[in-house]
Image 1 (cartoon, rainbow, N blue to C red):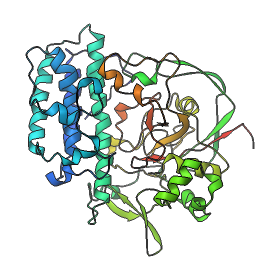
Image 2 (image 1 turned 45 degrees about the horizontal axis):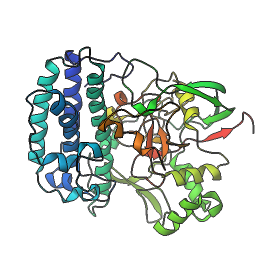
Image 3 (image 1 turned 180 degrees about the vertical axis):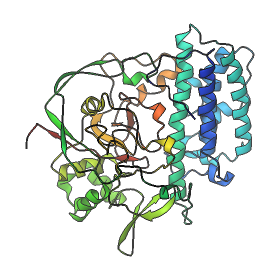
Image 4 (image 1 turned 180 degrees about the horizontal axis):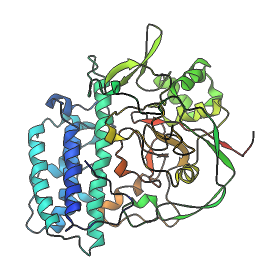
Length: 438
C-alpha cells in the first residue's frame, strides 16, 4: 500500500491518485481492526483513551461534517444522532457527548459503525470523482486535513487499544508474534556520541507546496545557540541506571509538579513496565515480554524525561534544535507501515545513513519547548480552526513520530503535543547539551 504524499504538490480531487489515497487510508484504518472482537472495540479505560469503535466513527464524522454536508449537494446525514455521539472537541460544529463517557456508547454497534463508514465512503468517492477540489485550494486542504486527521487516529487507535489490553488481567495480544520478526540489518546497539548542530540564525517551520498543519507555520527565524544532540535515543538499559540511582527518590531532579505527581500516583518506572521475580518486563501490543535493554525507552512522560536528562547532566532538546538536526534526513525508520508497533534497537540510521539514528519512528521525542504559536500564526477560520490552535497552552512539543505513526503522515516540521504527565503514547528521550565542549 503506497500512501506516501508529503513533499509532493497538492493533489486535486479529480485526480484518481487522490481517490486512491483516500481509499488506501480509510482501508488501512479498518485493517488495523482485523482480528479484534466487537468486545475489544467498545472499552474505554481512561479519559485519554477512546474505544476503537469511536475512532472508526469519529474519523467518518469528520468527512461527513466538513466535506459532504457543506460541499456535496444532496448529501443527507446517515443518522441524525451520530454528530452528537462522534464529534470530539469542535464546539462550533455542535453539541458533543462527554469525552470520558465514550465507552458508554454500546449502540450503534461495531457493525452499524462500519455501515456508517461505508455510507460516507461511497459518498466521498462520488464527491471526489466529480473533481470539486480542482482549482479550489481551500476545499483541497479540507480533504487533505481529513486524511491526515484519519492517520492521527490510526495511531491513537493502536495506542488506545494497547492501554485497553494492558489493564485486562488476561493481557491479550493485539498482534501475537509480531515482535519475533527478524531485526533489520544494522540493528545492533548504536554507540552513544554527541553531534553538533548548526548554530546561528535558522529558518524554522513548514515551507513547501504539500500539506502541513497550520501549527507548523509560518516559517520564521530562530537563533540557535551552540549545542549538541545525542546521536541516538536513550535506551531501556540507560533508564534502568537512572532508576537504580534512586532517580525516582531524588526531588532535586524533578520539576515541582512532577514530584507531586510522582508522590501521589506512585511512579517508579516507565508506563507498562513491571517486575516479575526481580526481572523487568514490559507490556507490548504483542503481549508481555522481557525488557530488551537495547531498545529505546518508551512510554515516559515529560517529567520523567526531564528528570532523566538532569540526572545525565544534560537536558531535553528545543524543538528548533531537533528540526535543524533532522533537516535533510529521510523520513524512514520503524514506522507504522512496518507493522512492528514497538520500538526497536537501531531501527533507523544505525548503518551510517546519517549522523543521527532514529530521528523518525520508534518513539515521539519530548522537547523542552512549550507548545505555543509561531510568530504570525493565525488559526484556520471556522470549526477547523479548533484543530490545533486552541490547545496551545500547558503542553510540550514532541517530534519525530513513533512506531505507530505512518511515514506518509510525517514532516520534519511536524509538531505533536501532549500534557507533561501523559505517557500512554510511544514517547521517549533524546538528550541535548549546551555548548560545543564539556
